Amino acid sequence: MLDRYFNYAILADIIVSSLIAAIFYYLNDNCFIKVPSTERLISIISDISNVAFTSAGFVLTFLTLLVSFKISANPIKKEERTSLEETYKKISIFNLFLSSPLYSETIRHLKNGVKELLVIAILGYGVKLLAENISDATMFYLSVFGIVVISLVLWRSLLVLSGVLSVQDKEEK
Image 1 (cartoon, helix red, strand yellow):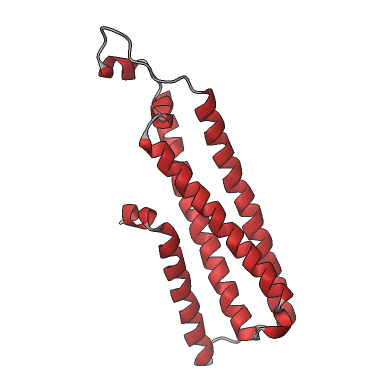
Image 2 (cartoon, rainbow, N blue to C red):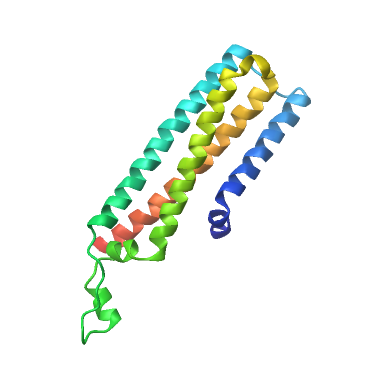
């Protein structure tokens, strides 16, 4: 199930965020919750945009570290008269990760996360600029959407980070 989520992460984030925003629409429509005032919504949207930019910085930092490790890693070379398994035994697990297709997948997921976060941040500032022309309810639902996308991207980034750290932990043991 998690593999399917990772294969369609951006689409899944949009669907989940839209569903949760629809739940909030239902709750508001049936008077279970009330939409905040315009001033409060603009403040919330600013906060969401700032969190999105900050989170993008966090993910970009992790991405930069991985790329730096890849650049400094020694390439895997099979020596003559040795099997591939013997060669792999001499190389650290983390270097194997950096040379595997899993590394490219990890980079792809992190890059997509940064893209999502930047879109949410820019969308938030765009909504803030056009606040006079947008209803409070729409700003509220967009805020809910943004919070859910940010949460999902950070959760996915933490899953990726946990996977990389588990590879490093295996290496130390």
